[in-house]
Length: 443
Image (cartoon, rainbow, N blue to C red; front, side, top):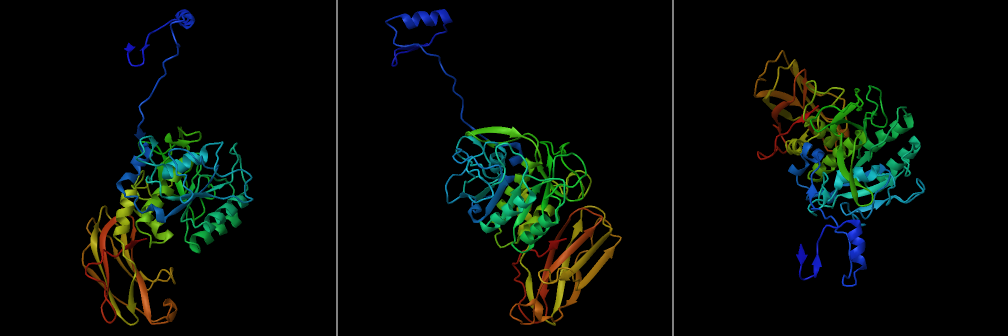
């Protein structure tokens, strides 16, 4: 092939011919033709599996995910580098710069959570617009060796101090620590942060911490066919599952690679949590966790099981689930309250109970319960339950005799129930607007 403008000829030459042409005074130069590749952006199967692209990420700048790991390849073309978006811890926890990653584990995790989309290269993450806030706490060196549990606690505290909403911990160990457990409990219940951790890669039923603490979401791994990964831990603390076999994401040196482990399932859940929370910023961390669990795609045995937890995390279904829940309504003391339940069950139910309580102040106090036993496939509709709000001024911050209630549906022995619940203050005080969304919380 002759290129007239360049006055160049493209030819196949042997080594001897190359030497001969190089010695020819009429030839300016001889060099190898180099390969060039099509630049394209791909969507890893995990992002497709969790249906992240079905949920808008236009508001993710209001959320921050903290990643405790091996660092972050700052400057990677598929990861945010703007200091208003990505920050890192620079204190005494680590002597290594958070903005580098000689191991690759942390950069891979970060890409799953927030690799930039629409730039024509690499991959996309659960949150694609490059605006999700990230805070990096590097606790591991380039060898990816162990760290003390106290270091993990200090790292969690740093995440809280940095304003994180979600903390991703693709790490852990087999030994329980009361100190670590207490920290997780405090961060969850006092700081309002959602903790997400890898369930472990031992392929057995042993606990793995911090994932197996009750206040941490434990994430199991599945493959591209939603089958359980053979290495994934299975126990009664597993909450949810996500893709973790052959996951493709960012790695250091502006490159990409495939990795497997519950470490790489974990950021799918952390990323989805941030995504659905961004469009529901008034929700609490516990409400977001509940939404992820209750909307998960059931895998394995019907209902929650030790291998998949509640099932595969689904961004689309979690967003829809959150759309069906309204904030608690306030009713004056002494009011008659009607809780209207309308719905049906997908499978035969053993019992269904209705509760009205005040979860923020007295989460374990049952004010009223109503049960239907021996139910078949259809739950009777229009079950009107008369309830009375009893006075207790502790419930209201301004000491007015008002009560905040959440109607709860507890289902035992059957699959998820699809229902519409409304709460109405019958006598005195404001009633919900007729345009209010369905009011229901599953427990």
